[in-house]
Picture: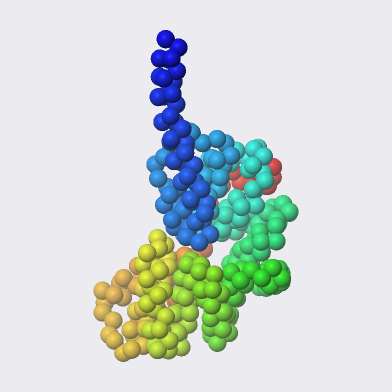
Length: 335
């Protein structure tokens, strides 16, 4: 009888073991890809899976990776519930040990949603949490991006300079590329086209040397934008094929919208007529661009090529933004 009961117990236990093994393998694979192909990580973690076989540390890792990949590819529709799940473990030692990853991803999300004050506070919490040199570079870069939206040029340049000094010292090629890409955008804001091109070229070269697809797409599209502004169709045609192939297979509507704008603008530079249907599609694509700064650039440099009048949505009144239930916890740096 004991043998029979033991056999039954084994039969019941093995599927759970197998299931835990499968989910844990998915988690490890998602973490492995998060810096090189976050779209793959997001796809893995977005499956309808039962996480009950995972222990607390594995679940924290799961939600950190899910939030990070969501931000990386700008898929924010379910991020609130993932943040809520993650914060339910805020007293856990593993959460506190990895709080900088969480704060950094949440800061980017908050900036994109218009919660700039909370985003700045989140970065400040992270910078006070003894980040590693690599983490500090990322935090300073993202703080500088936020400062651009706050129109705080002093803070933006100061943060980029601090990040660049660390990145050069540690020979972090990808970080240097990101800083160059963002400095290109600052130059473009000021109308310094040649300076922007120089930074974007350095950024693209850096990203290519580290095989960073997301960076290739970002710097590559920015450089295509510069070539359109310069009416340099030859350089545009040299670059468009590899960049468009990346973007076509990447789930980010903002990048696809910008690509549509620059491709259409290059057609204008070649003397092609743009029909009313395409103009209507361009207007739709304009409101799919992520962030008012990118919309401003397109409105200034590209829209006049099509004789299109666009209205940039006014920034949401920060007082009208709904308070999120975890803001009070953020004020305490989730301690």
